[in-house]
Image (cartoon, rainbow, N blue to C red; front, side):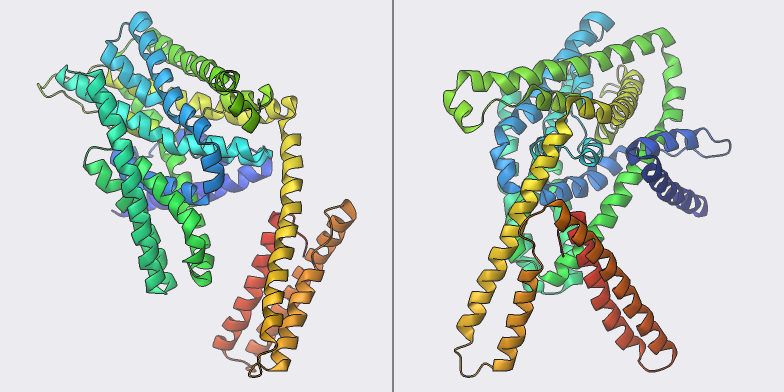
Length: 535
């Protein structure tokens, strides 16, 4: 137990150090974490660290999917639902079939094993692509499509995975029955996920306690995932629907205190989970190399290279026709959603990173069939899957930034970002004006103190005056100067409070209350700076 805890502390230290190094050299942390895990795996004296598949599928995946779904815009998800469906379902099935055909005809694998391999390697990851893409300032629609695909495609892949494992184990497979089962699972999980979210939000609203509410929010994704998964579904669709429901309906039911504490809590949870996941994924190479000795090196390299090439080609071969074909066939669709630039489609096709869910699915393969025979090609599937993760993650992380610069897609993102901030200023003005009108209506109340009305009126007028008319460079420069000066003044206040505490003028409880106000003000400043919003 002590040795395991020491390894855990080492991994935490590596996680923190790698994050700092990634920021300094401007490389996606996921790449460095994966490479750090590979390096640590071969350090002399370092014990082998296995990645239990149930850890990923049952403990890690639910909060990752749920938090991403909560952060996603329900309106944008619905607008891009057709595109997301074509990628999360169509592209996964198409890729799985292409891999199965190549594995059968060129490697000699049985069809069932080929489909199993295809189901494992078909779904792009939900974590790694967004971690890379968000740093590049891509247009919001690209990020929404990639995130929506990453959320939903695991469901398609895991259902195909179960069908393939069952076919290998029993030798039986019925396409009509599998298709009906697939759509029944999707429909039932949609209803169940929405029901779990509805109950969760009502319980949290009833609790009125931030600690209890955050605890319920942590339980929610596991309830949404575990029950359908235990009954033979994927659990992914239910968790996605649950998160989207909370995203759309939660703001009016979740208190401000819970929201503030929950943001920091979930940010830390997801940061730890993602970092540990990539580190532990890298650790698996050592064990995989030992297991792969049962196959000739030539066969392993050929199978790995073939699957990598097929997966990349299949994504491009699907994404372009799936993007332009429906618009070519439907004039209504063209009018509502015109043809996108080929550059945008290229970025979506290029960003197909595989992640830990694929590795967990490969690790979860049984060692033996029901009759006692070894599971066919298990170690080969494991090695091919890990190699695909390594190549797509490192390749996309290193080559996507120059590709985006070459295509000029980031400039579209900057224009979109500026328009979004203009809209944000208008929304802030409208919200403040509406509140001010409500305040003026209350001023006629004889029981309302005039001093209170004047104080609140002055507060709102000051906040309105802090919003500029536009985001021109001069206003941005004034904003930056004001932000730096505000942060300096907060620091002066904080040092003064510390001096008063040291001199016995105030108690620790008083210091904590004042410090909390200063922390909230500084956090609000950082929030506006992050969005380049003026003070």
